[in-house]
Length: 174
Image (tube, rainbow, N blue to C red; front, side, top):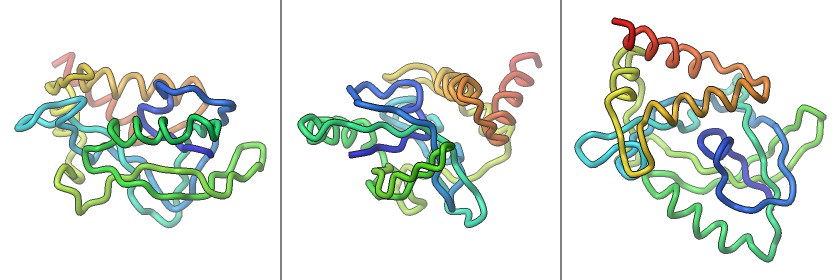
C-alpha cells in the first residue's frame, strides 16, 4: 500500500515505511484552507493547515510512502485519528519524477463541505491566523515553516507556501 503526503506527512510521517519517493498528483493544488482545532489550533481559535483543492491544470508535489501489508491496518487506524478534523480518504495515481507511477495511493483530502473548512482568505489574514494559532501539536507557524523547509529540501517549489512564509515574515517585522 502507498500513502501520499502533501502536508505534515512530508516531514513527520510517524509510521514505519518500506520506501519513500517524491511524486505528484494531478488536478489539485495545495492550499492552507483547512481549519485545525485538534492539532494546530483549538475550538473557537482554529489554526490553518493544508488540504488539496481541485484545479484541473495543477500538480501537487509531495512524498509517497510504501507501507508493509502487515502494518497497514494499524497505520490507517492511526492516520484516521491524525486526519480526523474534516479529512476523508480517497485514492489517486501518483507520478514520480522518475516516471514511475503509483496507480492507487491513499490520500487524505479535506473537502469544502466539512465543518472545519475555512476556505480562501487574503495572504495577510491567513498569515495572521497562522501566527496566532497554537494547538496540542504546537504552534501553527511551526507547521507552515516545517512544510516550507521540507518542500525546499526536496526541491519542490510551491508559490502558495512561499507567499505565506513571506507574509508571516513581513508581519513579524511590522
